Image (cartoon, rainbow, N blue to C red; front, side, top):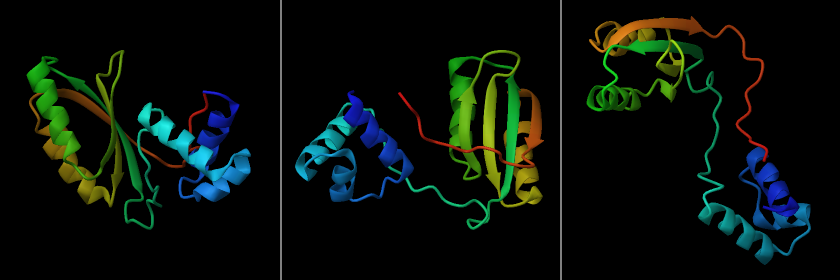
Amino acid sequence: MDRIDQKILALLQEDASIANNDLADLVGLAPSSCLRRVRRLKADGIITRTIALTDPKKMGRALKAIVTVRLADHGKTARRDWLAQLDREKAVSQVYSVSGETDVVVMLNLTDMEEFQQLGERMFSDNQNVIQFTTMFVLEQHKFNMALEP
């Protein structure tokens, strides 16, 4: 990746809906050259997908929680099955396997405490593979940036 690729990525991470002609103007390329570079960045797997970020409050999911989980069975099947269940939950936005005392960190965007209680019972309390979980509710968000710099 050269300097122009990096500038293209920075601009697209800021606003992926930018028109190719405008993007080309901002990076100093002809539109066809710019489009070729964007397509190459996608083909090379540098740009993995294009999404629209939404306002959680306006989507009715303003309650955010972070759940740390310790699992009893780290075997491939038990872990895979539990992670697949999490994947089907619409309140679950992110799941990370981590090192240390915690096995998994789950990020939730919830409608209310009732949804949390139902999900918590189903996915954590009543699940035989979960030996311990801790929930932290987000009081304030100080930084949220999905963009990455090379």
